[in-house]
Length: 194
Image (cartoon, rainbow, N blue to C red):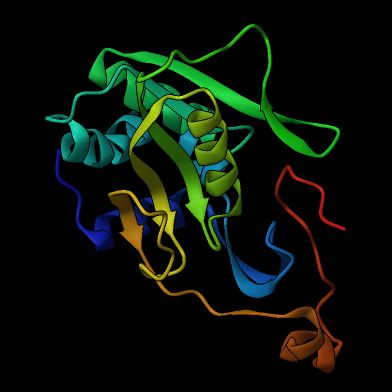
């Protein structure tokens, strides 16, 4: 299935996954918009449709395993792996450090696709890439549902997103929403930010 940007945005709006307000992003930056992909991913049909855009892009690549950072990337990684007929594993934070746990490991030269739900600065993806490289495995590419950077993040590997947008974000000290002081700052994601 091939969805247009408008169809993907419609899915986000219908599932109340595109939030408006004053948000603290995982990157530490502030924004007036937040993509709560979990609201889309609660519906298997939407998950399948959106992830098929990522799967189709990487289908002709040799991939052994799909890896994703917890929490946001787990369902995306799993669905892409399911569609490719490959293994799905995930990283998670332990003592504020991204790591493989639960007996997951990678083999030397194993070909790995990294999946994420939303990319803003790419911080979690860069951490996962380092884990893959530390095992001696090979990153084949990176896939995400939403690229909030509008293609500005360079992972050094082929990168495909289902939806590419430039969503404005601010350093906390430059945030005009904070300066207005009328909308409280909220942190809707799973990762704690200092």
